[in-house]
Length: 437
Image (tube, rainbow, N blue to C red; front, side, top):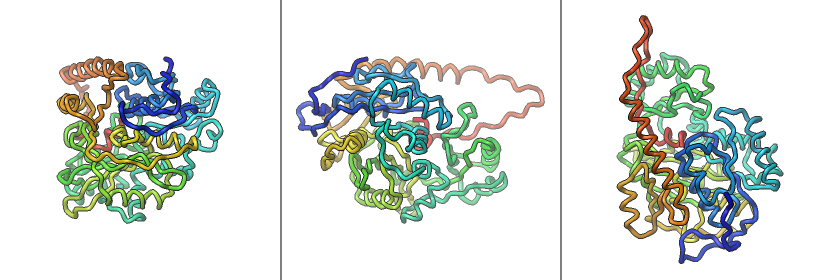
């Protein structure tokens, strides 16, 4: 697919608005290792940069992917397989670089990619343009076992978390923390795809804790049990891009109005809601860590203390990052592109109240959004790029039908003497959906 060539240097996001001038002469590579065909964040990055005239290459699974149908994709490339070691990821990126034949901005779109790129920083220098991130920092912030310590050093609240050393400690933690308990894995990107382990789940019994502990042995990811914060205080997130001097661009703070699955999953409807306290906390944490690059940080208010508790630090764009496209069209991926190609980063002009809706997760909200005036954005539907929304609708219908057929199929009979593990509670949380998206 050929990338459409808009007038050089003009950002096209919303007709009729003034836009920041951008030189699109450097190509970009979006890396996604997790094979999720419905990742709307990747499409958002494709459109954000493609509308500027940037040549967009995508290293991601193309089969059944609506993203591959976007008119703003210059070329799809085979991604490294899930669980690939850094050397294999480096080899895949070198093959892409050889096809492009000139340096390109590289933006990982999932944790596995961000961590691999952080490890490979020196090996990729000269081939790709990357933020000057302290070594292995992406892995440190994404590791949920290290997160409580990072929060303490920055004076940021974090829910009480236990890392059990054996089954007995896992069972005891359920009683100590109170039910339900949030069960998560310290390094979810290391979980084997066929292990049937969700990156985050809610559990209610010591037996479930013991079972999870046993199933996690040998995966390279430790089981963590965390105090559950009731969602009554609201779910919040903060996105941004930290430039070479640690200054933040292209993001903001938002509130989750609808989630998928309902009440606990990814952001299906979000609203740009400036919260100075959250921004100050994030600026403090970025400065404390020396973090550089794109981030997506999740918070929930502790109903007992009224404090914002940091739940997850994702070292890559959040799937809903386009919520924070400002009055000049600047978002986190454009901010990274401008910074790494040594172009001027404009002062942000926030659009409080702007909404972002994911149609397949919140169809009624999407219909209302279509009938309303901006500021709002839909994840899939775009008048200047209609093919991905059409393909998503068809694929999502087939996906829903396959799930329905699997649920209605009779369970296989257990073999004589075979003990089947009881299912662990499967109510997803924001962390889980972020890991899979």
